[in-house]
Image (cartoon, rainbow, N blue to C red):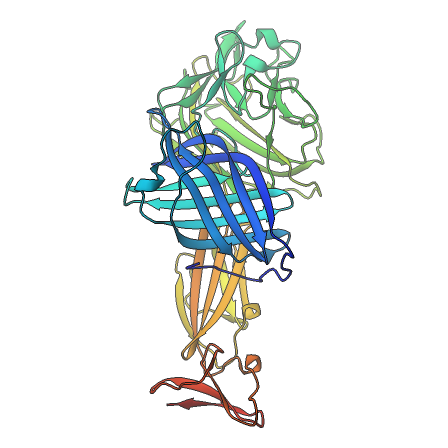
Length: 502
């Protein structure tokens, strides 16, 4: 492999090779447009190394499907971070033809070797990976493949829709009053439809308010399920809810909840908001996202819930004057000891129930949970790295001491980010690399500190043999031929060590 960042190599090598097939959701992003499919990823473990294979990779588009082939990465050295086994590598890969009989042609034979970057992790029985496939030579772009679920909402770009009731539709993974429960569900009306006015791709979701018997019903959609239980808009019998114990499914066969394996740092979405009639007292649309342990929860809350892990709310989304605007909200953790298993996201045309106007609408597109991946502080041997800044990635410092990975201390902006440390020796300095990988594997940021030092890792050198002096390069490799102008470490037969320059 050309680059493999490691913190702690997994020490136990497998006695025999193990192969695991993951039949998982796959989200492919090309030119900012995402498509969703299912696929098989095979992971082989042999003698402590991993081979990862994305089988029968195909690009989907409105113009038809394009078979790419098999993408294989081999000999990946894992590292452990808590309960996560990280697989981080970059390699040049020759894509091979797939074997799906439904694909008449594979591009593999036409493609030159491509650079592929892998960021992945195994947690328990689940696999989460990102592959960045550099096809700039052939397609003029890098294709991003997200593998596995539990970190984002499906159908982020609102391109896929399913039938709900009658002629009406709901976006996959989302629901509105068309599929509401409650005693007044039949009177709730219709509040959602696809729109060709999109931030990216072909479609966005349009949610809109209506007036029923003179009462304004805000347009609302949720990853859970709506309940219409009262004629009073402010009554909490009208709410969105999730409950993973419920077996009901929607018109696409999906449950009325979204699973989530960890807490994001924030939620972001593109919106275009307008009011049918300006209301200075109630001018805002809203988005909320609540991470729970999967047991029943409703928004707005009707009691104090102990199953909430974190909340994110933006209830000041102002009219956008006909422009697409990105809005966001940070997640704030609660003091509850619940484990994250699901998330309830709700978007409404007004932050206050029943206080908007007939004709209020919000167009929604490209929603995403954001997982940060940057350092906020960096120390080596307890000393601050001079001039450190989050967006500066290369540094120099001088310490006449031995430096190991354990000597690097960091703080990060991602609540659940992974940190990988590596120290290498080169000539008269240590090259310290710190890579921060965000929780959903979508991004990695690397920082390098070159530490000039006269110290070397003498304790790691092999002893001299048969009473002779033994010579080592600065990276610890024993050498037999000394080249002019190079610095070497010599270990005498009596165990003393020193430096020499030829």
